[in-house]
Image 1 (cartoon, rainbow, N blue to C red):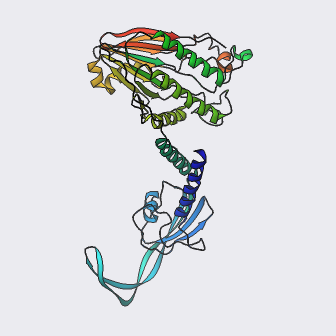
Image 2 (cartoon, rainbow, N blue to C red; image 1 turned 180 degrees about the horizontal axis):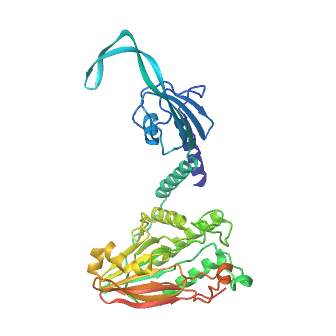
Length: 432
């Protein structure tokens, strides 16, 4: 599959280069606007091109005044999806042209007859000499091609799941499963931070915690499972081991392996949970691996698009809400919004769900330790704010700053449609 993707990408890349260039056999002159952004395909003279691959200079003589970059894009028909304007200059001059009168006869939009008469006089018209320097958006083009191709192939090769016949429950409950701040890919040395951690250890701890959970909930009438994912699912966001904001982390350098291991782990967890009840997955944006988490959501959507037992919500919003009976739960990572505003945000952003709910909570990650507060609103009612624990052990930075001693655990919540939260579960795998 990867070989097929590589061939398709190279073929598309070559097609785009030929399409964008629009050169004659000498590679120095075009007879229409340089890029093919749409609309006008009438021949135009005066366009001289100097092409050096991903950088291009265009000299053009036009009859329309260019004051802004927007004018330049419109007059030269530059496709800004694939080219970036670095700079441009405009100068004014005068040109002498023959004075001609044109008479066309048109029927149904087609010229059926016409003539051009030369008056014998000359006209002096202002012209504008434009020079523009362009850079090809190579990285953007490559990313778009690769993502589109991967999505297309994932759709084509989506795993097909059979519909599971779950038992019919008269008073079914919602099981919420929480593993925030996993920080997959983090490297910790026990002598330096108090506890060893790597990709293998982290994956093992997650499966142990999930196994505990599945043993705890046997016998409960679980109707649906809510599974938020993201919330700093990975420790870093790029191949250099940096977070989304550019902070360098103690990280496994095999960035492709850590991404793939995370995707496989997510699928394994979702598949295990779906043996109990239908699973609703919410992708919650973290501050360590925001881009990777969006890609994860996209990959999971493609993978489960033919699975009747799983839904994936990869909506771009950083705050998400979930309603079950009289329960309303909000989810956000917790690194941006002021906690004091969360209750009013919930009431304002989902007023219909708010009015139908009796029990309202916000569930946050980010801090790696447990906190619970109750927040009143100016409207009737209140909201419980919960900061959830993390399974991730401290690294050298946490140890040096004294952020140690937190209980390392996953958590789960059982919700009754009418009675609200009826049980909290703490999942604490053994330390390696």
